[in-house]
Length: 457
Image (tube, rainbow, N blue to C red):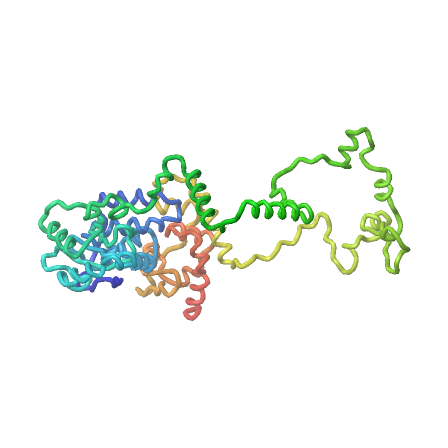
């Protein structure tokens, strides 16, 4: 499979920057996502950077995308190394990606790989003329037309080693080639003769009748021959058994069935009678001890009216008020349940993100990072230069990568004690300026800086 490593340093360009057209395109992609979620555009920007760089991603391009989106380099590198659509080493003018998963492998992908290995060498190797390089990848989603390859942006399907070789010859010579199936198949239709769904009754409107007739004929063929008299005797015996031992009726299977209420209050009222029977009213008003309709009271039976309502009426505490239970005053604020799982830093970070998002919603979309930060916080005090020309290594704070360390230095932040002294407004200002509000709280930069600054104090 693919070797997901960056190209050697000798092949890496020193710098990378989007062209003016691609830089403008990148801004339109970033603008599709809400403030603070610009990292969602990482795949789009990496794809455009690869396209601009001749079909592969150098380290400088990955770092440029990370800086554009305010992401740590390692997070962008994780994306680039995960997806085989990103080439991390130089590729040929025609980059061949061979699908090697089960459907393609079963249909001849091994032959394609052997041919490419014989013609071009090992995967990742660029041919001497610079035209071709190849790589085995996972499923490309054209399983019906296996085996297949992707060359640059296009799919070529139903291949054999011979047809793939001819295709490569045509590409190298600049001759026109056919994209898609190389055998004349249209889309993903069955190869060869159609052998499914051939019953005409599926399409001529007689499907139900044809299937019913088929089942009846099959049933007649399976039934043993029996005389009419025997059938009559069996039928008679069945009728007699049903009369003497009937099966329970099938439930109504959830359907509402209208039935006349035999003795419901509404029916009694409609008949001119009192809705509630006198005996029912007497039973409802019965007082004293339960005798279970018959028999004397038993030891331990309680007064029927020994209820919370009765005790409250008589000035006694209700059942819920007995014992040692504390009853809060009516005007007291109920005690809030403890938080389930969220740490103080996470709660603070979420609150910070919500507050900043609300404040930034009122700003114009083309506001600069400094204008956004000024709208929600206060810029921390800065130094013109590091003390004694020796700045602290801010990357020792978890969450600050080399890029963010440089950006903090650009703000005049060089030392741990500066970060340790940040106030709430200053934390908000820096987090908004760096385009990740709430992250400073979530990763506790201030607490880490205090611990790092302590030995020097």
